[in-house]
Image (cartoon, rainbow, N blue to C red; front, top):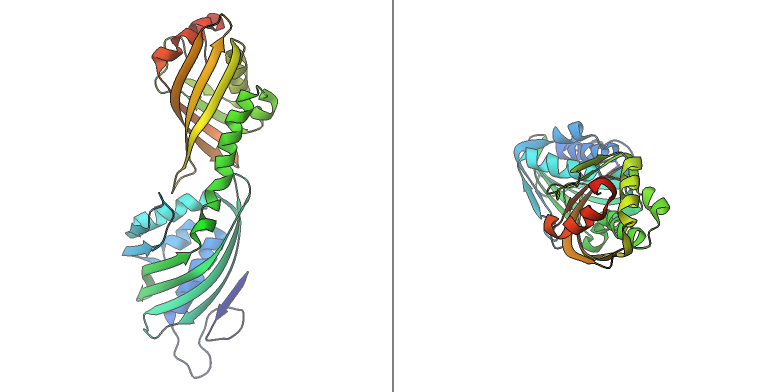
Amino acid sequence: MTEQSSWTGKAGPAGAGPGTQHRPGVDVAHDFYRALQAKDIDAFGRLWTEDAVYRVPVTPDGVPGEFVGREAVVAGLGGFFSLFGEVRCTWEVQPMGDPCQVLSQWTLEVDLLSGGTYRNRGASVFRLEGERIAEFTEYVDTAAFLGVFDAKAATARRFFDLLHGEDLGAWAALWHEHATVTVPYPPEGCPCLIEGRDEIVAAYRELLAVYEKFDAEPTGVHHSVGSDAVCVEYRVRATLAGGAVHTGDSVAVLRFRDGLISAYHDYFDPRRFQDVTGALPGGRSR
C-alpha cells in the first residue's frame, strides 16, 4: 500500500506541512482508499453525505454511471466488494484550487473471488461538504473495468462446455459444496430445488443418461453490476435415447461464492421438457 499527500510530499498519513492550512478533504480521501482496501463497508458508508452522488462519466454498456444517495452508493460499492478477494491499492491525493475539492490518482489490483485479477488505474475528484463526500467523480479505464466480470463469464461458459462434453468430474469442481439448483417453473415430476453439490451432480448424471446426444450452447452471457450474478441465455438441442429430439431456448442465472457457483436458477419452457421428465427413472429431473 502507498498513500501520499501533496502536503507531506512523502508516503504516510495525510496532514498539513509546516505553514500550510490543514485540508480535511485530504484526510477523507485517504480514508476512502483505506476503506476500499480493507473492504470495510461500514467505514466506507460513514464517509458520505446523505444525498451524495457517485459518478463515473464514462462506463461500459450496461454499467450504471451514477449512484445517488448514500444508501445507493454503499449498496453499489458493496456489490463490488462481494466480488473481491485481496485488494491492493496505491493512491496520491492533492488539494485543488477549490477548497472543497481534492484530486486523487490511483492504481488498483484485486484478486477476484471467481478467479483472475482485476487491474485498473485512474483519477478521481472529491467534493466535500464539511468532512463528508458530497460528490465523487471517477475516471477509469473502461476496458479494464470489464475484467471484474471476465472470470465469472468464463466459468459460465465452461459450465456449458463441460456439460456438452459430459465431463461431470470437472463440472463438479465448478460448484460450491452447499450450492443449490432452483427451477422456478418445473414441469410435472421435476423437483424445483436441489441442494448440495453431490446431489446436483447425481441429478445431472441421471439427466444426461437419458440422452444419446446433448448440446447446450450459450448464446449470450450478461454481466450483472452490483451483484455477483451472471445471466446466461442458452440453447439446447438434445436427442433422447428413443430418438426424440428436445430443443429449447432458456435462461439461467448463476451466482458465486468463494469463486464457485453457489446458486443456479434455470428458466426453461416446462412443456418442452416434459418428454425428458418422462424418460427419467421415477420421473425425476434436474
